[in-house]
Image 1 (cartoon, one colour):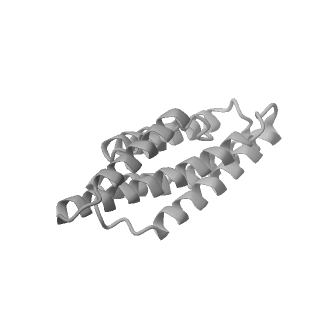
Image 2 (tube, helix red, strand yellow):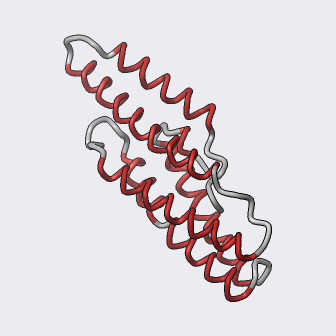
Length: 159
C-alpha cells in the first residue's frame, strides 16, 4: 500500500524514450513539434514519479502497528505531494485522455492511505477493517496503474 514498487527500470526507459522522441521531434512541422511537446511532458511526469519512488524507497519496513501507521501516513503525504507536482505541469499538450483519469485515481490514494492508517491504529493491522482498507487501496491503485499504462507512463505504475 505504500507504492514501493514503482518500476525504476521502466521509468528510466520511459524517460529515455521520451528524450529520444524529443530529439527526433526537432524540426519544422507542427506534428513534430507536437510529438516533441508530448515527449517533454511525458519526461516531466516520469521525473515526478521517480522522485516519489525515491521517497517511497526511504520508508522503513513496518515491523509493528505503530510503524505501519507511520508508513501509511507518510505514503499519503508522498502521494499528495506527487499529485500536487503533477497538477503544476502543463499537461494539456500531447497526453492521452487516460492521463487525466490516472491523475484523478492517483489523487484518491492519500485518503485511502489515511483510512488504512486509521484502521491500523484503531483495530490492528490484521483486523477486518484494516484488510478492507488495504483492499480498497489496492483496487484504486490497480485502476490508476491501468490508466498509467494506457497513458504510456510505465514508470508511474506502482502498488
